[in-house]
Image 1 (cartoon, one colour):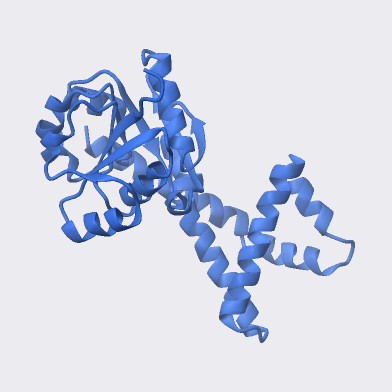
Image 2 (cartoon, one colour):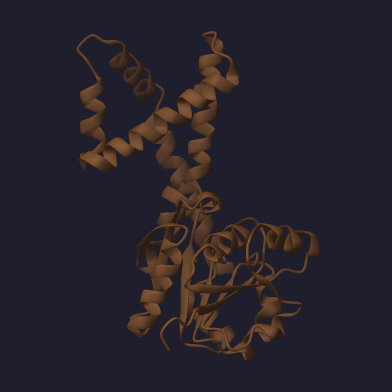
Length: 267
């Protein structure tokens, strides 16, 4: 029926579940429901966005989509509560829990995995989306529309999820660490920390915007900034001598290995 809203229930209102709740509630095409056991969190979200609170998971019936935003270690104790709900689509953001495990335990073949990052809080998440080839096209489209409601969505094979976590889901924390240390270097040179951090934040934003706008490779843009015998090439040399590339790749590798371990342990 024209004008009918898509009904979405979110199970879990923590950092990520809360961010997704806020983002989806701003979209006119969605009617958003939330189940969150901690009343303080639930009421805080209710104060900020137009949602309906559910007093129990069993109330999440007749939904078009249910988003499972629980901690992976808590998910097994919720399967028996989620099974009877039978929505058109389940979406899970539980790290390390693969599609096969989800489908078997939810008793549902229409399941999609999301891997967002904390940028969802400001509508700027980078989210990986994985689904089986058997998923109906309209449900895949719904999944991608939902993911795009709080940032950029990338459809990936599930086998690449751990790699995605390494370069996005966890890597956003690497970027924050880089920001902090770059700002602290500014402090060392006399710039107050808060001002240095604002400068660094703006610099990273301008770099990302420039790359997107030009479509140029990162190494090409880096080379454009490096003048012969200039200041930038000296800094690049210091990064190279310090093993910067290896450190970054080692951090991603450690994240990927941990993600793969978590996936094995949830089977």
